[in-house]
Length: 181
Image (cartoon, rainbow, N blue to C red):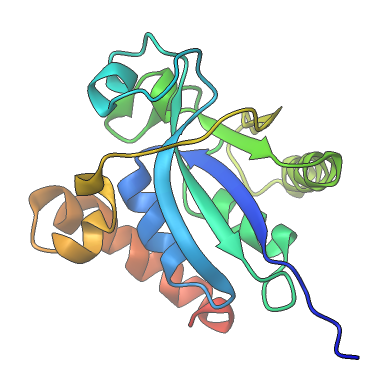
């Protein structure tokens, strides 16, 4: 009898979800990436509500991945390498709690693994300051509006994509060739 595996879910907030979605879509073992909102107090928020900073939600991505191809710790390492986890509620020009660095764990095991990676990175000396990324249990996830999905792929010539996402992707691809599709 052939053993079947089950895909897993990871939910990360690392600033604007246009950037994080573009990064994670390029990884082998990643089945799907969905931008959305998590961690807040209202159901089915709109982007306008989330950007107000009053909902408690963060812009996040929901990653469906095959753990037999890419591990959760590998995803965590990519996450930490592709945003600044040492700044509270800020990524580049994006400022507010909706852009906070956060990991929404689906299980106690994911929470333990995330905290272990954070401890290892804090002890590595590779960052200018301590990692402020929060690890919280995933209690809700709401899909972003349709126009946010595959934003970079649909709008590569847009100013934000050219100035922010393209350079981030080039740096990421050069550093993580072994994990790319």
